[in-house]
Each structure stands twice: as C-alpha cells, then as structure tokens.
Length: 554
Ligand SMILES: Cc1ncc(C[n+]2csc(CCOP(=O)(O)OP(=O)(O)O)c2C)c(N)n1
Ligand SMILES: [Mg+2]
Image (tube, rainbow, N blue to C red; front, side, top):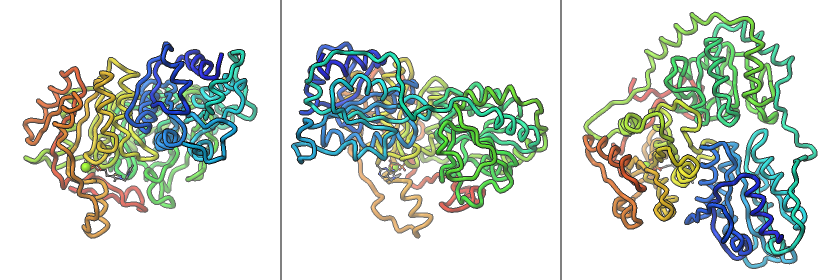
C-alpha cells in the first residue's frame, strides 16, 4: 500500500466514522484515496472550523475527533482549533500534509514548520519520515489522544511519504516507552482521603471536565449522595452532575453562583475531581478557600499542586478513584449544619435577573430550555452569551454542554455544533451565540446546508462585543473602545445559504421562534435582538477573592 492508503486504512481500523477537513496540494494523495474510501468526509469552509467540528464531535461522543488539512496555511488555520482542544483536554487527531521530505527547511511553497508551531499546543506530535512508521504512528496518535488526560495529537505527513509503497502491518498492540498513565489511585492516598472525608463538617465537591471525560458522573453522584456534599462545577464540568439535583450548586468562579462561591470559601474540605484550579475558578489565589483541606483527584500528575497546594493528591482516572473512595469511606460526615448555611446563601444570593419588556438574554435561554429540554445538546460561543448559557440552562447529563473553556475561542460554538450533530444525529443541537462570535465562523452555514447538518443557532444579538463592553463599563470608566459591532442581516444571510433565518425583536415572539426553529428540518439562525445593556452577574472582578462578588441586582 502507499502511505495515503495506509493512513486511511488505519483511520478505519481505529473506528473513525467521520473526518472534517479541507484539501490542498500536499494532501492530494490522501484525498485521492478518500475518493473511494468508505469514510464520511465533511468539507468545511475553513480549516479552523474543521478542527472545532472534530473537537465538538469528540466532546459529544467521547470518541477521537479527526481533522485533515494541507500544509502551510491549511495547517496554520487548524492551530486555533488544536490549541482549543489542548486547553480543554479533548481527544483529537489532526493530520496535516507537509512538503516533500527533501524540501523541508527550504522555505518551499506552502511550507510551515507545523510540528514546531504545534509543539506547545499538542499532547504529542509527529513528523513522519519513513512510510514504514506510518501505521504505528497513527495507532500511537489515537492511543495518546484518548488515554490518560486526553488531548490533541498532530501527524505531519510529507507528500512523498503519502506516495511511497510499503507492506501494511497493523500494530495490534501499542507500547510507548515512558508513557503509562496511572489509572488507579494509590491505596494509601485513598485511605487518607476517606479519613479526611469522615472528619469533615463542610465538605464540597468541586467537579471539572475530567468527570465528564472519565465518564465518572455516576460515581460522582453516588459519592455526593453518600457523604451529602454539595457539588460545584466548573464551566467544563457542567452536566457532570445534574444541575437539577438538590446537591447541585451550579457553577463556581468568576460568573458562578453566589452560593457556590460562598460555600467554596467556607468549606473545610474540598474534593476536587478532574479540575485544575483555573484562575477563573479560584479568583485571588492566596485568598482561595482559606479553611479547606484539599483532596485533588486528577489523571495528570502535572496538574496537581500546580496552582493550589493540596493536602491529598490522588493521581488516577476519576471514575476509578471515585469507585475506590466509595469503597473505602466507612464514616460519613454529619453535614446538617453545613446544609443550613448553604440554604441561607441560596436565599440570600439567588441567581436572578430583572425581567422587562425588552428581550432579556436570560429569558431567551430559559425559553430554549423549556422548549428543547433535557434531551438537547447546547454549544456556545464566547462572551456574555456563553456565561448566560452556563448559568440559565439546566444541564442534567454529561456531554450536553459544550463550550470553549480554557482558550475561550470566539467562533467555536457553530462549527463545534456541526461536529456534535454528526456524532449525535438524533439530538437537537443548539449553538447559543453572540453577534460577534458567530461572525468568526459564519461561513460554516455553507457546510451545514450542503451536508444537511441540522443545527440551530440562537444569536443573542446585543450589537456589542458584550463581555468586553461589560469590562469597559465596570473597570474602564465606560470608555467603550471598539466594542460596538455591526452585523449583516442574519435572516437574509441564512437564506442566501439555503438555511432558515428568523428575526425576533419582541418578547412575545421569543417562544414561537424557538418552537419554529425546533420544528424545522434545516439549519436555522434565530436573531434575538436582546437588551444591549444587559450584563452578566454575579461577577467576581479579576484578582478578587471569589466571595467578593458584584451582585448586579442585590
Ligand atoms: C478569537 C477571540 N478573539 C477575542 C476574544 C476576546 N473576547 C472575549 S468575549 C468577546 C466579545 C464577544 O462578543 P459576542 O460574540 O457578541 O458575545 P457577547 O459577549 O456580546 O454575548 C471578545 C472580543 C476571544 N475570546 N476570542
Ligand atoms: Mg454580542
């Protein structure tokens, strides 16, 4: 087989169902073999969208997302999507064409040092130098991407390698020297953790994206109920514990709920599961959770004690470790007083907004939740729209809230929604978008319509780069600098692509528009003209302790 054929044969053997990408000169042999391969290929309109779609596919399904681009500009266009997947620990394999081996380093046409460029934003990357290595490399790439702490792996394949002939040998086993993720927690550490849990009076579970990637949601629920600990989630962790469960505190951190943040600050034992103490969660680091001992469960030893010194580190897969803990816990803490305090914070700091005759974004999201319900999968763009989607929709199952957490990439939500829909064709998929963000990958309307990818986009159109405007309003004396943004007529634009567009300017039109979009078997843009001045509250100003929140209304 030639290299290109080997590559495709390997993808099939890895169980790949769909590949997102874009062709070009240095991947011609691969696309020639794709021509008659039994693989679904989605031609996006921009390589960045191919990477985000592969990322969305992975987040929704738990499988590895795959994208392909040509050398040079194709590969550099992928990089935002790769960095995005890296920051959120998403399993992805990105394949790029490269100039012929003997031209590398010559500033050849469309040459870029892609392994160099992506080294800090991939879990691992490869430049294939011999076709005989190709099958092994592909196998390793899928294994590395999906094991331990997941992440993107890039394979750069020079076009002459794609054409070289060799015998195809499928490596049954993968063995990588020096790469052996620890999957079970150390029994001594599990004992220590169980003892601390037994002694705690104010335990709190702090759940991150690792709960979802490890499939640990059942174990998390069991533990929370067993020790009667409230659960606060990060943006990445939403859905890892049901937002409608009485023990849920919703999201914590910068735009978290008042009760989650107060509980975190008062807790005497924080059990962090698959979370990394990101600055959006901790706020002022030296003031974070001053009374708490910390148990930190994470599959990546490098993330333990990176930002916050912890008392009991436990390296291992979250699902396994929670299972071990559940077996080990003999004494259950008495948390009745703790729950009284939490109830009083819930009364004192409810998540709320002032409704009005204008369309409030929170109201739109409540209506979407009521209409689409628990079965839907929500993706988001970045900004106020993202925070409102995190606060006002109830995520009751893992993999139903898909958002760019670590990198905060505007333009993520729409192409990610395409990947989600391809992975979960029976689900309703809705991108909750901002008018600024949607314009960053709006060309994917073409991909959606052409491939009948039936996703809904709810644009919270405030005429602003709203989140930046909010910061300028609060911290830069209302000196609004470059945050007013115009948009095209989204209805006409959608129609020009063959999609449906609906414009909503009155409150009473909100629900009917959502119902119509859900009932339409086509891609739909709904352009909600919301109150342009609305801000996201509560808010912890950057650098403040997380219980020093601006309440907005209170
Ligand atoms: C690619 C990218 N560029 C810039 C930013 C900085 N940024 C964060 S939120 C935001 C405004 C987003 O505007 P919009 O999509 O309209 O959302 P809104 O906040 O108005 O809901 C900007 C510019 C970013 N996160 N990503
Ligand atoms: Mg906006």
